[in-house]
Figure 1: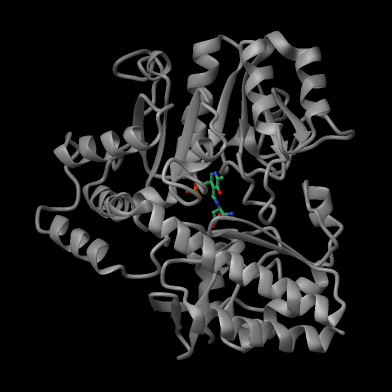
Figure 2: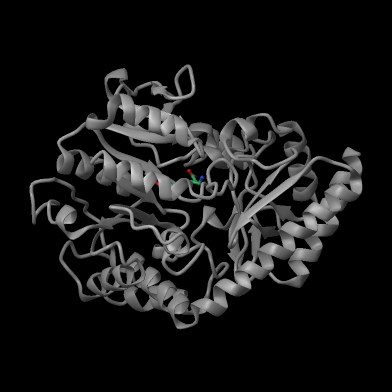
Length: 424
Ligand code: KE4
């Protein structure tokens, strides 16, 4: 019996997170048994260049020695206490120093927990129930966010999963990303009932879709005007696109920010934080309940603190290098597609890259839906056979790391050229 057949007998779809099952590209997933730098080592003995990067955490590539050593050291003192530690205070201080809009922060165990908690806090702080999310943004799997856009551009959300009560999603309003009129219309209609608008300031869950110029600034203005909180979901972008995340790139102060991925150095973590007057309402300082057995886990804190210390030590240089690698990759892929006369768009922000088989620009999820998804799947498998592992979905973001160098980029170009030759 194959490993995937064994897996499917005990794990739904054979995986512990849906995207890993290759449903977006067809075929069976590759089982990984190890990784180092920019490479994955597979169960069937292959070394693959890794553009998944665990969907964001692995900004240095796999097994950065300092992070591995910090975990090993923390392990000498046990793995969890259920008591406060100096290390979690130090990580919280470092996060707040990097994100000026985060005066206080609470550590949790996943991005989902972070956005779920931010939602409860926003509703408590405003006394309102409705929220706005943007179609194509993903904020984890808490009920209120599992919402597809209903009919029409801006409307009440309908559940996008069984098991999510319509009573819950009735309070979730949905508008297309980058469509300011749709958001204004929602505020015109529901303004005084809206607790918060949550947005990925640079969207990474429909491929990579940057905000249009002025979009985020306008969201800041309209939420402030209506007394709603602006929540930046930086689980993916936080410390990934810049030392202080997307909010420092765009110089916008959200009321709350959610984080994850990079701040755990590859171990389970999430965080939410923001204005002191809001965070002081979180238990036990205030009445808004939220808790977690393994929140602030010593191993995750050790790994995350070390990752942030490495980033802090020379962040301009590190982010410049990631920028250069990403620009080289994106530009080279576009040149190859142009040479083959194949409609293709590569969008990027820092080390986050979105590739789309369509003429750009790609500004919202319906542009991704209309792209050539079958071509993406074919190219995905040609690259995989050539030793390049993209994320297995056209709706995911590719991540380059500090470990991706000339050799990896050139190998990717060769494989992409081969894949498109078969398409032309
Ligand atoms: P987690 O609960 O998966 O730690 O975080 C949820 C989340 C929240 N906000 C944003 C902006 C996110 O990107 C995520 C999770 N990202 C996906 C990548 N598309 C995780 C991959 C997966 O679901 O396996």
